[in-house]
Image 1 (cartoon, rainbow over the protein chains, first blue to last red):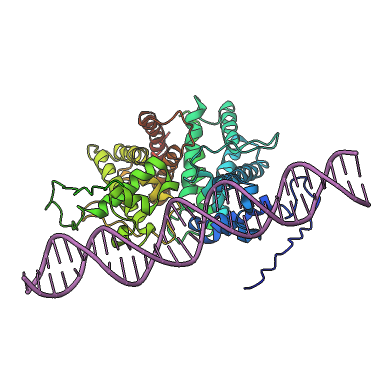
Image 2: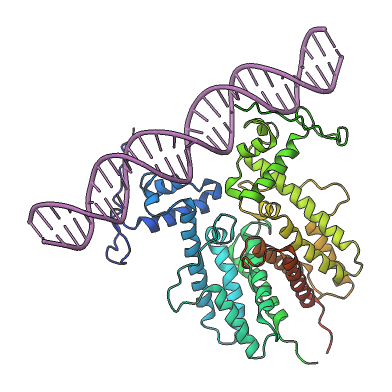
Length: 221
Length: 221
DNA sequence: CATCTATGTTGACACTGACAACATGCGATG
DNA sequence: CATCGCATGTTGTCAGTGTCAACATAGATG
């Protein structure tokens, strides 16, 4: 048989991070990346621990040194997704100052994250976990996605720009709207014509604007 | 070992339907029911063709006489779900006459279907299909869920009750809102405290009412 | 009654998740 | 620098799964 040449995976960044880099370079991250790529290319049905290991260039049992089981690997993918989504939301919101503009930016960012990272989004919110997923390890000082949304809406209410009262119903409305839109796009329910990120962003902008309008404090006649 | 008594499945309705009822009673439907029950009890990870066959009281290869593969069985579950969801929406909308009331009823029905039939909802919209899912076979004269929503919104616009203009954006807003809320509830993102159908219905009513308010035609000064 | 075909069974194969036992090399300790 | 321990990766194995082919049987059809 073909003597499968095991590539040394000579990563250029040896002392870049202080995480584990024993034999492989950083097998743990390599496995996460391989899983994401595999889902993107072949779908969830093709997500196999053994194929993930193959893509990372290790044998079929190596992943068990980094993840207790298949679900733990998916949990790592979800954590990566939650961190990345929060980061993209912060980046889109940063240039904006007004609460309404920040809310708008957050909504568009939520949808666009799902559009650009369907595997992450599906793992984060899909039916793939039997045990409840643990909270993602947030680096200190970095705000999570949900927290960003809640605080922005509260700021909008405090500034008298959004409907007064409990913030929870407004938060849920906003979350439901963007989450529903993202889900429908990612799961292909909106027709195959809509595949480009450009179309998706246009939809996200229209819908998020409608949302912000709807949550605005009604002007006094 | 135990001589597994194969129950005759003496169904009381022999000539009720003209579908297949050869050796078993109606193995095809029995398999669909078993799959739904299995997902509800053990989750998607436990959904196994062989376990489904076991629950139906047949051997492991029997399902292949009715479904080409595992995905075809899931497709049957999805079809059943789409038909049931449309039926429940029609039933909740039937007593209402005004377009706004009908829209409100449709939204609540959508969310409550998901809450009451999580396995169906997840199969319908989850990432479980590699090939595009075929349209469910609607009995003639029965309107599908999406069609119900579109027509109700158009009626509201025609009556001057909803914002004028293209109906598509409004439709997408409504669909996204209820779909997002349903997904968040079903996937347990709203906390474990929210499990009862009563809590879910309260949420669905509040959010759907907010939606209808937001889609209303703004009153002139 | 004879036969045909849809339905269900038996047996097999490649593949998977998971574990145990073993091998290896990095990095600390002397 | 030499040694050693432990984290990391490998080999081998097992039960369980999806799928197919060959076979068996029962209801309908003539």
